[in-house]
Image (cartoon, rainbow, N blue to C red; front, top):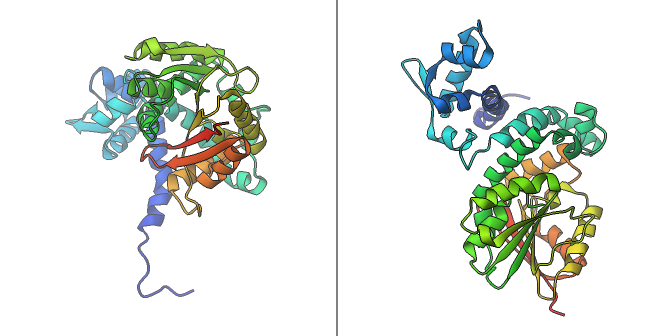
Length: 346
């Protein structure tokens, strides 16, 4: 093949070649504790090397990492002294209520290694946790086995939730509902956002016992704390708490369709006539040509779960099969979109 006289711009290809290096640079800086250390006070590479890597550590390699973070806009450098930029202070330091560090660490320790086997996931159509880590049983059973890992991940998901849940609960007028049960609600960010927006709404965060303690901590910091409770349970095994509005935030994309059908049928049976289900997921375009974040999330589901992302039509088919009469979808402009499915009135 000859080179065309006017070859297309190679920038998109070069950008993608380099993209994983930038991600890994941020992952490594978070894992090494760079942003946490600089959150306490600005420092130079030599003092940070001793603090983060141990006595006798050469500052040169760490200096390269720090310079790269500065080049990406995460750090500020002046006269050899590094400090966090506001974006790092907000999203890469644990003390921030919007911190994403837990999800960054999960991405570094779990997702990044599994994505190295994406080709095998495509060939075989299955997750990669057994190939990568030798685990039998689900990723959730193993990676979140320790309290520290679980709390770190949930803090990261809370940061994501604070960026997306206000948009999800605002996508539809939910003022007619009186009782929300957020199934698998984690730290309660969606229930909190809903009760803060709708003053007549009460909510329950329904999740596993190891999660509900963290939910209580976050709920206690909300102005709506008197209207949000935490209930321990497993939405596949246990009775669901009573509600006229259920919510599933980033839950359905984890599971294959037989498990989704089971859960949706259980929710439909528990709802009163005219009750509804609010779903927070990233929606694929109907022709699946985009958006790219939904494609990336769907590939992520291929690598690390048994699920995938779907179009609104695909969700609607599953919901109507479960007894929901109307299904509406909204693009929120946030990290996830919103779907509202209403049960038949009688």
